[in-house]
Image (cartoon, rainbow, N blue to C red; front, top):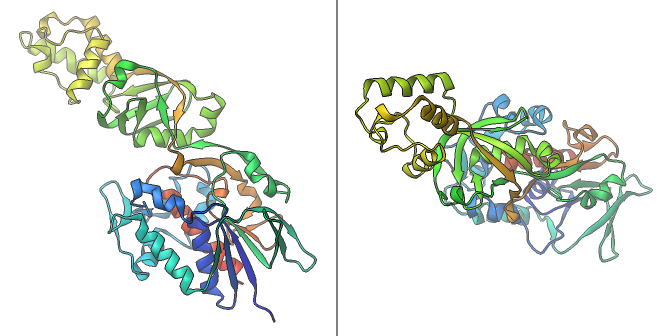
Length: 408
């Protein structure tokens, strides 16, 4: 009986991991990775500022699945087979020690993404996985024998018994048209994980200021989150903004990235509590200068900006601060309002919401419900996560399952 030939389309994290698992599970399998570009594991290389955020130190299945605005339910079952601790163990048994940072992100101890790339490349070589770069796949179709014909951009056709699609996120639906032709539903790709562009030059002058935690709410929506926020020279960024952009990805795309946000620089502080605290301070310390006795610790430049915005002179004694002054200050501390007119994405690390509909895939083996022998892994699926290593974890998990299933 001839060896089974498995073609993996995509030379990224999910593709490599699927190929490695497949070759490991079935040593007689011929595994071939096809990569459209000249670069392998490109996203691994640039992620985490070149350090590669391999996974997240969250070892509770339910908590982990909450990091995925799309795919939470389906990944719960997938994670029961390959979890974050399995990722850590896999890399450690292959010579790569990981470390955990304060925010839970996990990186190689070397702080160099090349460590992860070298590990995956070495394992692929050891397992005799064939790799072809600059090889575009134009289409895939069933052949007479129950396998597949993989049509390449150069006109060549490859025969395969199984195919694993791990092409990553596509910024446009046209990039997934060949999967649509196979009968799959494609959820329209829209950007996820982006920062908010705010045309406010005075705010831009505060670039570099961070507050942790703050609360950000998208006005007239249900989207509201807490976390670290960063002021940039184009608007607002930081984990809370990126997380919000992920959960509200489709809503914000419908809004054409023009919307209003409210920022509470005091996080969950209630309005009536803040008012009482400021009024009590005024009553108890009438002679004290306001900026010498202010109850909330925020970066000085930000506080100065909020005082100016509220038209309050902080050099006045508390006795001269009126009730209206306090009300305006509270508005700016708790409901600081900005108009967002666009987004900024980091091209090399772009993440999309959208892709192959999750209803089309059996998450027990990552096989297409439409076509037997066709498997999916990684961001080509309508799965995406917040920042912190979660997108890579989904790639390792789905790659692990797809690779093992295709090996059978």
